[in-house]
Image (cartoon, rainbow, N blue to C red):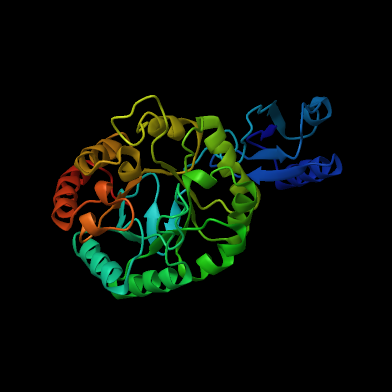
Length: 337
């Protein structure tokens, strides 16, 4: 439920309603706006009788929000959220960001070499997996904490903020010691204990869409994070599972403008996991930016043919440099933060 106040409502009116909502057993979230204040009501599991509320001083109208997500919606938060990742801003009005790096951290030489290269070619953040959720248990699972240390070293050497995945609620604190942006992968999009834990950690979170998740399920997953008090969330489209087998997944770029209609959170796109094919990564990265994405995540490796994970979808160094040159031409038409 959303209580919309009149233009002339006073702070005393807002405080009185906040108190009454709490007495009803719900949580009140005042939402200041440039023209008027609204009060979001959270914690109700069904319809709330608004007769008494409508009679209170300063109340203009009451909106009943039936969506499973509220805090992430524009109903509760009409203004766009800008997420700050160690000084790199992501969101509407900001220059689209590029996150580059290998799927998995394999060695100190590999991650530092990649970090310096993507930095010198214009990337804004460094990605790299230390904990790897793999389909089969016999494949490379990542270097774990040693990988985190190497990623942090590469971030320091290059001056880039670092992004890495956290897979378990038990590891959130450990990963947060090293990472600037915590990634919740597609397979964990509905790991609700993990979502709650990253919501409590107060570090920016990159939430990837599940392989078969609807838009509503995707936003409801983000709601778990915001409900714990962390509004620094970036959504990420990484392709969904369909009947098509020509690509690894089907990249749903229509979600980008749709998310911007429904939510105030920024959204990025991962064309590497979406396509699974090196030749398609750059074209779809550019398409994502044209569709309005706030940035792209791209896998790049010094020797993709020797990569321990996702080599076929990883760009070579020359391929990444070519893509960055092409993206730079697009940014001429995009507003800078």
